Length: 163
Image 1 (cartoon, rainbow, N blue to C red):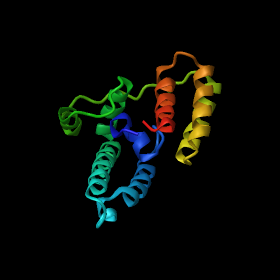
Image 2: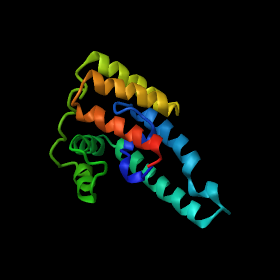
Image 3: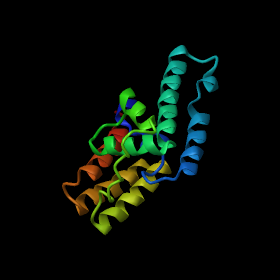
Image 4: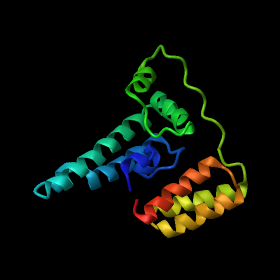
């Protein structure tokens, strides 16, 4: 799967509403898996790929553990952008910047779709991508036309297809 198609939450394997301690735990697990030093002595291409993945994970960690940067990221994510620009990060870091907009209500309206979505996320975190695909497909069918659900379904679908 292309790194450019993953949002920070998916990359670290946490929910959108995960508290900071959960993000820190997820990053430590991520770092143990992808830190470039782990691949010392192996193929140069493999080391470079691990370094690229690790840099993106570090970026995700920095953004998601800073409340201002996370609020800016959540707003960008709602607009379909998976990364923040350097300017957006700088604005979020400034104390005198305008307060970030409040996080909007859950983008899933149907209780049934929300239940399927949560099961799909759980299955994805456990590495059961086929079950995640089925649950997210059911969530999309329960709430047709929901762009949030459709984007998450397509992420899992692409992962299963090896894109």
